[in-house]
Length: 100
Image (cartoon, helix red, strand yellow):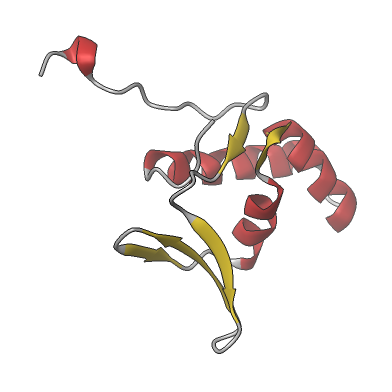
């Protein structure tokens, strides 16, 4: 396969609008009282912060807007939250868990 045919890596930026692909579901497991990301043949156990971010990834809001919501909710600096969630979402994008 030539490099020209390779899929492009999604780069997460402040103006990115991300969502979960159709084949990945964010579900709460009541029995274990844990949130899980369910994907074909894979299960991810996101931490509480990741869950709050993923709940807001609806494909409509930008990453920057999500950081603003969380900054207000948790009384924290938006620029610090933005940096942290871009890093987290980039890792998830690299694993195919979020898409634009």
